[in-house]
Length: 408
Length: 152
Ligand SMILES: Cc1ncc(COP(=O)(O)O)c(C=O)c1O
Image (cartoon, rainbow over all chains, first blue to last red; front, top):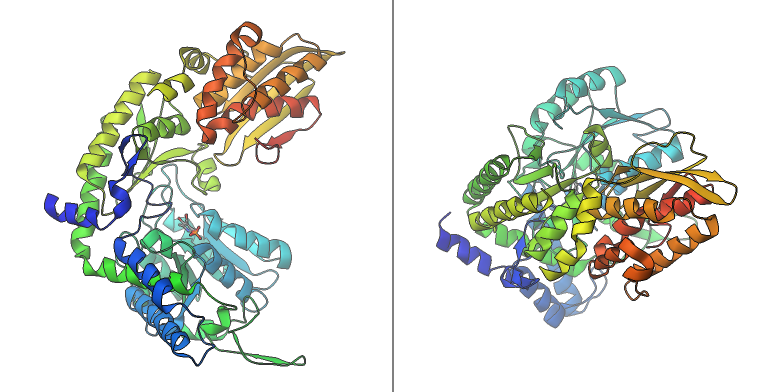
């Protein structure tokens, strides 16, 4: 990407031109949440200024228009992830709620007392705790595929556990949020299917970085968060294969998810409405569609290359600093670098960078079991988006050099 | 840079690099793990209590410069004191580290006054209080305390 091209993209994100602590903001916490393009803000503004109404309920013009916009957003998301039909897209509050939805709805059918759910040692807490809650409630078993000393998934161990433990479900992350490592999920999903194991794929950190096609991956369920892919907070998506969603009972009960209600018997709607009880985040879904429109209006191949260049520069820069160690070095990595410094703790690093206007994350990144496995309590993590620049990477490296000297 | 330099004063950096009373404590009578779930940091405080006195105190564990320096200064401030006095010091420090808390002063509180820089960094207050919460928990016979359940 040329400098003028990047400058144009950066102009689409108003927050990128503000200052923090008297310095230009350098936002490198994109794995936590992404910034929003003006197109999303304008869409939200237009919705509330001109179109706001509840959906699926009114015969009046606004309600019909809002319903249509909401359902078009569902189609937009389906197109974004390559889902065969909009009806396979369920709007949720985020990736977390999507996993909880699946855990709740599979309970009592696919997952019974004694059934095994297989996860990996690099999951976000969002893909650990819902299964633990289910374990405590219903007596499922939770098993964990290993990662090695470098944080890479031990694919052979995972395959062995698929064969030996015969899990009812494999639920795993595509791209690790703490280390940025990309798992070979195509190969894993194909292997799981050979052993009749359905797969839930957590794509929260995949979709912001590269195109994801659920039909190509062939996963049974897929989840992601809208706010990490440049959309509004409070939005998320569950995709499921049609027959899987069809077989799942409701998650929450309420309005909008029923055909008819009497005190004797309530008939539920089919997917996706069955899983969207109550008034959903209408504006959020519409804003998410605007984010995806924006993203697809860019040359995504060029964005992938640009992020690749940022990652390479960050890795090279950090490796040149004595006493700095990158955690999670694998061949296939999204533009996320996690690191530790001999002389400074991740919090100290983050506080110092904050003074320079640089936002990074420090801590366990909601992956405590992974940190424990690696013998760490936390790391410092710089996570990039396509709107970050080489100059920002260079500033990060220069600032880290200063910090290193300060703590000696 | 002024605020950050106040946070990371020489004395803090020095305690971070060469923490006092660091490591396991032989014959300890009381121990507690302080845990900060926001960042995963853990500090273990071990005490030898004799009658109404804190005979000796050590700490160990993973933590940032602020939590290590604070715990290190704490051990020097409370070792050998009566338990009531230890509690009073802990109470004074915990109150002082709150946003609008009363000041610590060099003449009375010594090195501990250097912890006040943390007030301008609300996200870091829990780093500074971690060891103190662990100390109070150990005195109370608790084995584990979280900065989230203990308040700031
Ligand atoms: C890999 C992964 N899964 C799940 C989540 C949970 O997403 P949310 O908090 O938006 O529900 C995150 C967010 O940090 C994540 O990185």
